[in-house]
Image 1 (cartoon, helix red, strand yellow):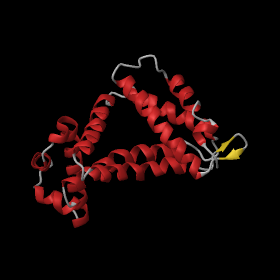
Image 2 (cartoon, helix red, strand yellow):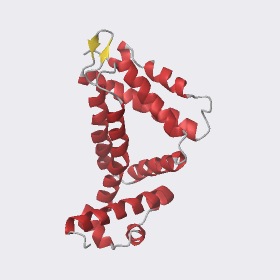
Image 3 (cartoon, helix red, strand yellow):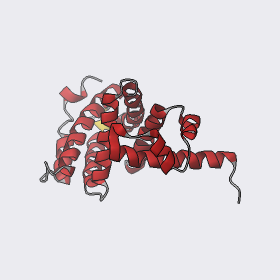
Image 4 (cartoon, one colour):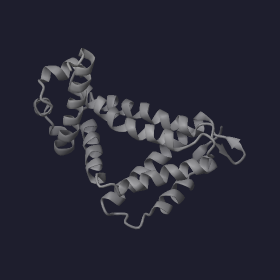
Length: 204
């Protein structure tokens, strides 16, 4: 059956994103647009048509990478779970990802994207914005949860999100790199719950 124009466009978009993820994970900032297009079975013209530029492709790649993770989180935590339970579950989720067979490949890809952002001044704010947009979903997930008899405000959720990101990213990288072998799932959860202090959450 012949594909529609929209189906062809989405197939090409998916092929370019998959090829870009493999090559960026392998080559980092040295990833070549021509090789990405070739591996996708397309031309560089398709990249410009679908993403506008190489940087447009890389920003879409970051979003495509993060999107499923935040979708899974939104489904995993029921709205009636309190803040401590949500943070506990979020931390345990991060620890389980460290044991995934693809954990090293994921870390390599994440570090490659960060390296690209550091080396490409024009790309840096665009990648940061792509991450921020995804993290808004975590803010929404935390906002309104009950804690110490009150509901967490959006302002408090943003402060907590920043602390959680720093803590869990560092711990996860340590586990995958073999620098934090004793950091178990309960350890991740306890460390995350320890952030639920007035100093971290701040005023409502």
